[in-house]
Image (cartoon, each protein chain N blue to C red):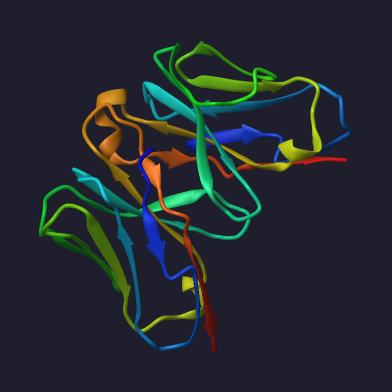
Length: 115
Length: 111
């Protein structure tokens, strides 16, 4: 039973399209995150939600909109996709915002390719 | 912003060799974590360090929290082919702060 699962695993789409990536965790964690990993493998945080509330919103284009319907789910919607959005997107979760030093559990990633 | 400098960027070693990689920062961190990312997967936590000077092992892996709280290293002894992957350090300044990740060390093992 996967702890942090994200779908789809692969997403190929054309420039200008709108797409969503879904994430669910069954660990009972309060905090969830979206990370972007670029071609140089650098992991950059995009958003974090704690109990459905947005607590981190890094400098990310407003074409990216996260949504957390409940604390077990954090989805990422991307409007008007651009070539530079091509990357691997990772969802992660942690016990709580003040307990994130116990480490994050990551999903297996969504490889987004914009053509 | 907070930055972690991780080195080396990549290593290509012979099976059976020991490996060492490290992470440094200009800021003090209260927590250091080491992750491994296999190809096509997300990072997985290997070792967590919470106290300056702490030395922790996980099988053939050993990590240390630097005494100045500004660095950490990870050693892998007697490397095997399945050690291949990207190793990330991550640090947290204090509770409630986001994790900051290093740029990763790509490890390749020649058998």
